[in-house]
View 1 (spheres, rainbow, N blue to C red):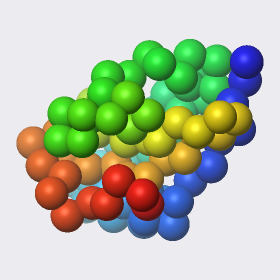
View 2 (cartoon, rainbow, N blue to C red):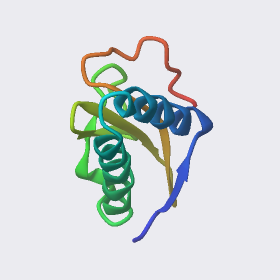
View 3 (cartoon, helix red, strand yellow):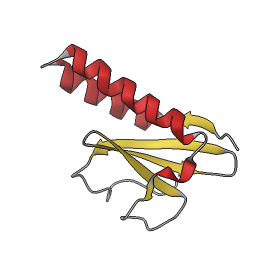
View 4 (cartoon, helix red, strand yellow):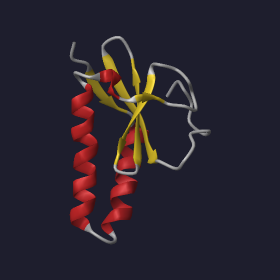
Length: 100
């Protein structure tokens, strides 16, 4: 079953912030990283369980995959995958709500 992909405003803002930060050193690498976020997201349409359960939440519907050193965090519903955040791999998610 192919899921519909949706992006929260917060997740898109996270990607934009990451790109802006990386662009200072390498515009080419910034574009590459952003492209990889969306490539990985597309794979999840068919393989939604590819990522691991986010340890901070221990909820099987909230999962993550790593893209370079970033955590692409998503919530699986019946027919939809909602990308809720993109954070650095070392950052804990104490400020994020499970219901975003």
